[in-house]
Each structure stands twice: as C-alpha cells, then as structure tokens.
Length: 79
Image (cartoon, rainbow, N blue to C red; front, side):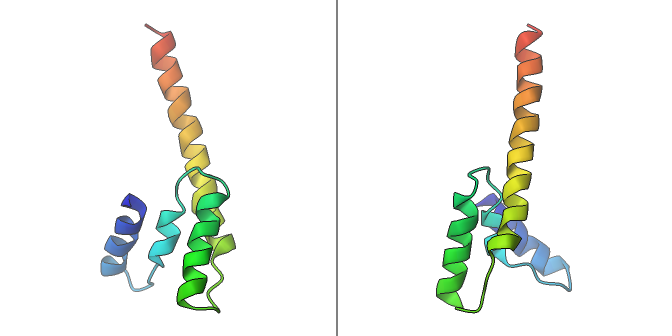
C-alpha cells in the first residue's frame, strides 16, 4: 500500500504521471507482484502492458530486502 500511496503523492508533485500499479510491484515477491500489477492493469485497459515496467521496482524490492537482511545480520552478529 505504501508504494501505491507514494506514486499518488508523486503524481501530485510532478508533470509526468506515474501509474500507481507500479508502486504495488515494489515488494520482493518476484515475479508474482509484477504479474498481479500487470493483470490488474490489463483488466482496466487491454492495451496496458505493465509487466516489464513492474519488474523494475520488483527487482529493486529484492535488492532492498537483501541489503536490509545484511544490515540486520551485522547488528545481530555484533551482539
């Protein structure tokens, strides 16, 4: 939900609009979150192919999760 809200907030501040469905793909559930975003987009508009655009935030979510896990392990092992 935070990704969708952030996309809507960015749409208020910028000239180029961002599809809020891209924000919903920013979790590290590869590739299911991107597929769900694509499916919801296709239900709204059959010409709206979001799969490759949704994979970018999806992979970024994986990278962010790996970094967060590394930081947490560092602090746990330092105790």
